Each structure stands twice: as C-alpha cells, then as structure tokens.
Length: 89
Image 1 (cartoon, one colour):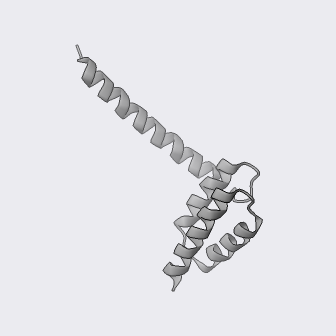
Image 2 (cartoon, one colour; image 1 turned 60 degrees about the horizontal axis):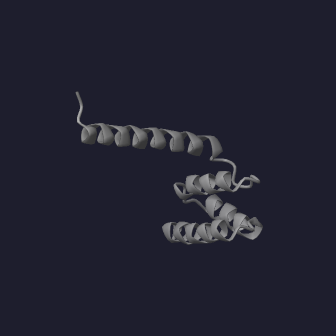
C-alpha cells in the first residue's frame, strides 16, 4: 500500500504530465490564430512565432502590434519583435 506522501507525489506528477500534454495540444491547434478574436488563441500563436525568427515573422509581428488592442498581448509582441530583430541582426 502506498504512503500518503507517495500518493500525493504521484498525483502531482500525473497532473503535471497531463497539463503539459493539454498545453501542447492547445499550442498545436491555435498556432495560426494570430488575428483570432479570442485572446488565448492569439497568445498561443505569438508563442509559436517566437520559435521562428525570420524577416516575415518580424513583419507579421509589426502588423499584429498595430492591430492588437489588448495591452499585455501587444507588449508581449513588442518584446518578441525586439528579440526577432536581434536574432536577425
């Protein structure tokens, strides 16, 4: 029989793995929804762009910054644009 502490650790580990799988699925599903009306989908699409520092990514981020009205998403895009421009320099 498992001790309560071991059971809690096992439950935590299972929850962590399940959460990682769920987030991976969300990222894959929403990776092209940069101009979607749902903020979560835009957030995930920004994360996908962060892994692709190209000239077209920089232009897309500039267009997104001009379009986005949510302050935290716009700020994240500005930081990402700076990172992409540094990577391209």
